[in-house]
Image 1: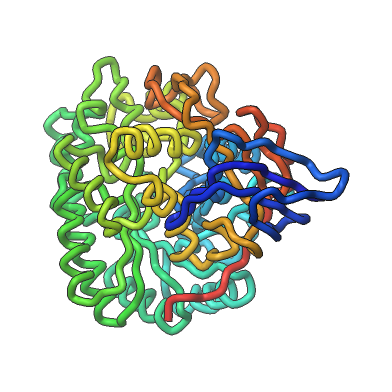
Image 2 (image 1 turned 90 degrees about the vertical axis):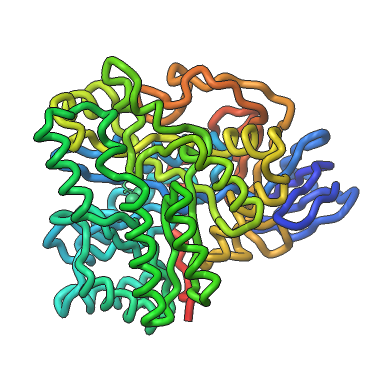
Length: 462
Ligand code: URP
Ligand code: ZN
Ligand code: ZN
């Protein structure tokens, strides 16, 4: 199997040039002008188009249990939607339920994904309990299965959240194993106090979600993570950072020498808290944690991406239907609304339109924050995250002139609404390849379920 992408403008995190890309099997083998290819080679004309490295979403929930329900995408529907949006590698979270051994969760995630994914994937291992019983399984998963990032929740107390004692232990282990720890940073006790107060005052609608998780709740969690990281010289990754207050905590720590990386989400860059205030319970579509913030935070986040202080832009894709899940479960109490704003399919188009076209970030920063940094931080680089000989042939031929309107009527995600319904976007992943196989052609899915593989990684954060 060979593939030749001709005459595209190749754009990576630091280079821009026009050339042909030849791929043999799953790998890029040559990049030069006017390459010839043996008979039988599949040829794609990329004249007038950009060729980007396949985009990587480092924060996606494909299998996500919540109370008695599950997020709606599966490894089939989620990876198809990812590819339609130009994302060729997703990072999900293998998350043990309370009381479950991590190895059991690992087996569940394996059976959910194996033979089903259309694009490559890897997992963070959520450490939802840390003691003598779980530590051996955690070791095994890192050493034998190539899962080299942890995820911890400082929120969701009583469910997935861990105590400060556990946090101290997890970061110590992470340092010893050379893995990075991704953290959901919110103060769980303040959240539950505020939730109880609001509900007791009859403030039960989705518009109150924000008020149960104000910025200081996130700033406290971020600052606490940094304190504990410093104690072990551990490497940490703040997921879904949403606001100025939390950013300041991360910046302060980073300037003091903490090995901290920061992720924000496309939702925080494009939506604000007024969406969660929409009437007729429509606001529930926009409930996620941390909550959407005041619009004034957006310039601050864009600026931090431009300065490459924020490393990655992810989605925290967590798709719950509006009607049967968000509304039915949360209509009497916003604290029961399943959290999440699905956007796996739209991240790249939104980031290109609102970032590059609007002049907030340049095109190299766009590639960096949507692909290269995730690959570097999570041990996938240079196999993924760039275009060079030896890298996996994961690429996106992108038509920058294509205009589209986002709508749930046509999206590929398995979800009954779009948070961006009616929004105009520029640019479309026209051809997308997964290790040398064309998975999207003319913007339509032509990929193969089962083609996607779980990528094993090496520890890279000693
Ligand atoms: O609202 C969110 N973020 N839902 C998904 C779970 C998480 O906290 O990442
Ligand atoms: Zn989270
Ligand atoms: Zn998440």
